[in-house]
Length: 113
Image (cartoon, rainbow, N blue to C red; front, top):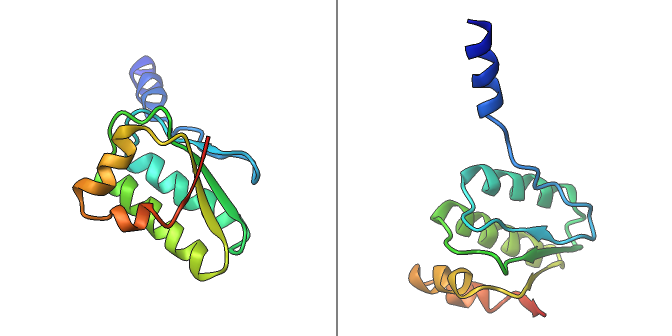
């Protein structure tokens, strides 16, 4: 029974999305609600008038939770005088915003190569 309990505890691990303040947050290929929560927590640790940089080049699909976390964070930063920048957004990243009619929110972000 100890082995089963150990394997259960190993199966539930949260991704390490904590990036140092000036480093980009690397968005995984298919971010989940867990990564959305990690993104929000990371953003809360940054100065509100600072900058959040997202590396979106590997995104293959995005769920609604992650997309809404991204938009909420971007709006919060903009309201406080900060900004959100996106590095090399993949087509899937851009399409997720378009699919939900939120392309105008994406266009408020800075794009970088």
